[in-house]
Image (cartoon, rainbow, N blue to C red):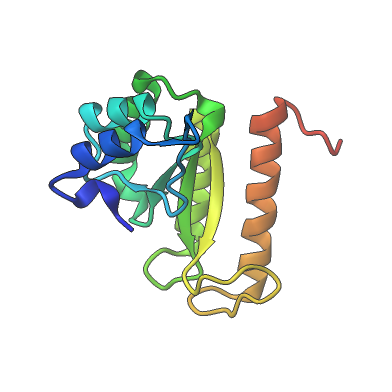
Length: 161
């Protein structure tokens, strides 16, 4: 699942970029997000060149990693990705990352003008989420905050007002 941690990541990405289906190019998505700890400018450029779309940057670590996340975001933008095509994944409902900490991360996503995604530790989605590290009220509140945040990033205004 963590393509970038493989020593042969550049070659794998280039090989995928060379693939054709019935003569047509293929676009790829890394739906679980990329690990910022392994991202380099060369990898970001190669991902973009080989049609990896809707980039998701996984931020499963503490708020204190904000500079490293911003650096990874900047690499993706420099490679050619648009802010509207990048999303920051945040691990939710886990004892390792608190509700308050994720709210701070969401605030940074506002500053960076990138979308966010609330990803749940148990892999479930509403209404099947089981509170593990957060309360159900926190889960519902954070989902609502993320939805509103993404509306504002997508539309530049709050479309529900």
